[in-house]
Image (tube, rainbow, N blue to C red; front, side, top):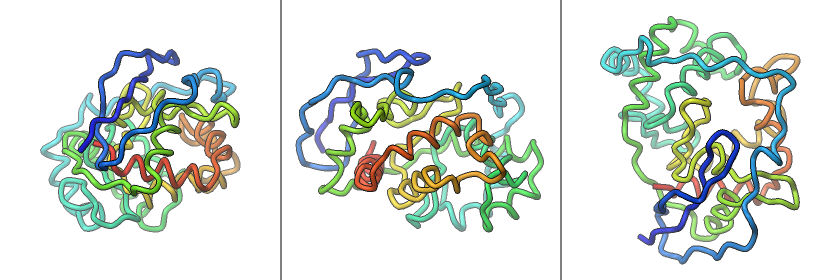
Length: 247
């Protein structure tokens, strides 16, 4: 498998050219960079008020207790969080901060899902922290990218689309798709492309979160609701394919 260059990372909102390559599960050569990097700070909108800092599940979360509690989760999310069903997300290696936030939103109804809401209702804050810490400690297994789309997806992920004010995904989700723990940005590498397409579609339509102002339910919701609306169906397909093949 070739090594594809990935040269952007984020420190706050500043992109730096300091990060080594990531691997994508394809044999085709990587496309040459055609456009300059697009800063997330310049292109992505910000909320009117600063969101609260994310809760730290590591303050009291215990991975061994999380493993026990997560046993029932394996039915959908697979052993150790590696789902085999493309409609269900992979949780292995996911940011514990992000997972804890999303489980609390399922529990409160802020994120409506007929499967997850009943599951999360019975979880205590301690249970949520334990599960979140457990899944972050797991290793995600690689998938294959669609050879027809991943190169365009890589270009969008790494450089964005200046013409349509779409910032580079790498600015928040990292050069290897591992996310940003402190900011609560989720890991995306090796995520099922079907699931990614569905979530970006839900962001664009406003269905990702519930309530009268769904974009503010999650601390990072305003940014994602706005960016997703700017993505074409083809761009969503392409970047989802690229993410699925990330290593």
